[in-house]
Length: 212
Image (cartoon, helix red, strand yellow):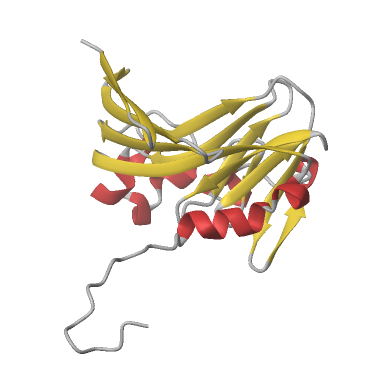
């Protein structure tokens, strides 16, 4: 059965949840550091495979614009210009899939939210009618395609165990609400800080060493 627990301290508040998503078991930890406008997610999925994908979903109640991180910068994402269909590759079989360099921002100019992903996790999907953003975590395929009619799924290069996506997988990502647009929020800087945080270490000086 699903379970949930929570813990609170002067520094961080944490909630943990366990349950099922169809045939798959999931464990999630959500953490909020007091004084920082960031919510951290740590998700573990025990996947049974299938044809589809796991995603973190963020719905929005307001109309806005998508901006995506690219190497050394950012650019707007115009979904009408994004290719999709079998000719565009397996990752783009679904409409409105796009790629970004580990962060995506959605803003109406007055307010917004930055989704900060782990290094190497760059697949996203946005549903304009629902104003819903998916951070694609894992794509799974049945070897040989199963009942999927797309011929590409029959390609021998996908007939191996790694394409199935079965087993235990761990994902980490964060959400950062902000005022203004991605520039005002310094989304590229915050995303880099998220990937490569500064870590402090207390070092005891040696006897006779210069302690300055």
